[in-house]
Image 1 (spheres, helix red, strand yellow):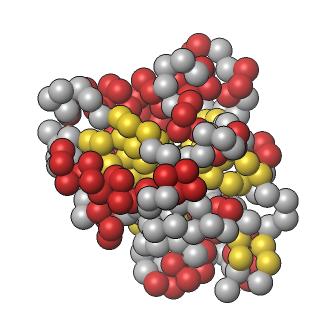
Image 2: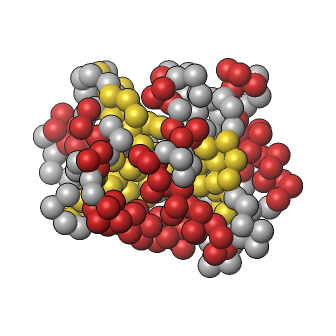
Amino acid sequence: MFNFRTDLASERKEIYQKANNLEEIDGIETNQEEIDENIKVERVKITNENGEKAIGKPKGNYITIDIKKLKIAQEEEINKSQETLSKELKKIIDEHVDSQGEILVVGLGNIYVTPDALRTKSDKRNRSNKTHYEILTTICRKRNKNGKCYFTSEFYGTTGIETVEIIKGIVDNIHPKLIIVIDALASRSIERISSTIQLSDTGIVPGAGVGNTRSEISQNTLGIPVIALRNPNSCRNGSISK
């Protein structure tokens, strides 16, 4: 089995295809859409165990949004990026919960490690993640009666408590219908840092990207759908090893 040096499903698919000289992979469906010259959306759907084994990801949907030159984008380009993310996020949410279902948004990560501190920056004060804040706030206020939907969780190394247990305690008390988890991930391309977003409906495994795997945050462990919104905030050299 391959030891991929990336968390992006689209990159893993490309690596596996190239390594095995394949045009298609059994159990994986893909399609691409170019929104404009700077925004591209690639959708990867894993449909069976063969697809799971091939790229080491659970069955489900993985949507990668690539936004070129986001760091120097003008207001019009930023708005277009927001529209694209909002559209894809609403689509994946609607597959799992009705229009009135309340959503809990959870920011994860290690505040003391810059590449893993995305969740601490997912608010209106940080321009690079303004897209996250505005879109998630808008979606939650339309669904949640009290308008409150967001909290951040310290990681296991600081609390000594598994993150999934902290989230489960909140879920058991406020009974949301769906969770959106914000976290960082690793890419094999430095060009993707802070300019790519991956959405998935399979949850996440905290610490997997740095070889410190913790209990997964998913429907299997929490009993409700978990959507992950993740940005590459670090890059790993190389592609695969066995």
